[in-house]
Image (cartoon, rainbow over all chains, first blue to last red; front, side, top):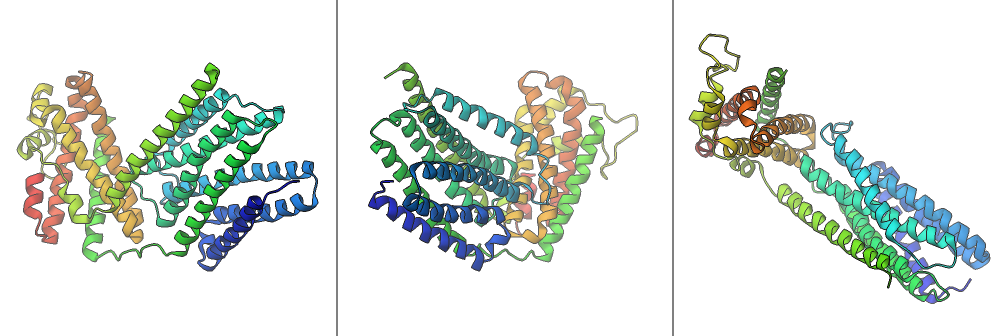
Length: 259
Length: 186
């Protein structure tokens, strides 16, 4: 396989960043709160190492199958990271907040419908049907991911549920990357994969560079500690408990009268 | 360039712009929420006509919050209730005050994780009251509020009346300097 110096540079930087981020997750004990995100970064590292050896010692076909197998795993793990971030935000007491459950269903349904619509509209020029499927599949998954992250911001604000610092940083990184990825995948679809793959490769390099910036952002943000939580004063605690009891009893009254 | 390709480019452009606009708008709102503090949140309570609210509320409940069963209770007509509450504006003010409770729960969950249980219960309850008031507002907008007033608005107003009285009581207990402002607002 012909690989350029830039390809090897991206591999080297990727290997360094994934290793550093894993060390940050381990040293700062973040892997306990974010096991799926840690697995996702670990899979990134394994993919980088495996694809390097396959590209050097393997055939073009073996590289193709390895690349797309890791691509599928990557998509599954990204969706799992979305679940993990939603879980941290919308399960403050260990169960999904009841006022956002219906909104989740709508969000998933609308996200899938919009992403499917975009993928259907895409008409990539390609020599193989497999390439068309890959381009459309990538566009679909990047559109879904970006919608899920923007949806998370909307739901959290509307429900009045705060993002914890590290959840916000991971989500922001992956959210921004997903939006850039939609543009890249749209570019892949527009320019297609003909005999000259230069444009396709350039767009892929931009996508990789964007992701490496995102990983560098995570390294810095996950190394930093979240702001210390504050100690609730006895007075404030008393106010809060009374306020909650009061609202609860008021609510019971409303419910009772509406029956 | 085929028409399908043109549609695709336009669709992607709209998709990206809408996503960025929504994300920026809500991200800014979340930043504003996280910069609030306890006292500033309570200062956001909207002023409502306390005497009218009390009149509507005390038509069906007594001072302790129990439902009145005497013959002189529940005598206000829907049109009178609507006028006293201040129509749609009055309901919006009460809805806004419930939103303050939601923000207050947000503030507590963000900075005081030890109180997450009580804050989350407060948030859920306030959201539900907000929902009831929102339903009334919808009835107002579709011109069906007159009929809905006795069934939903009066109990909601009574609830609001009790809630705000108790918030003032909390502040009286706390002997806080902003009590006068709070009493004016509520």
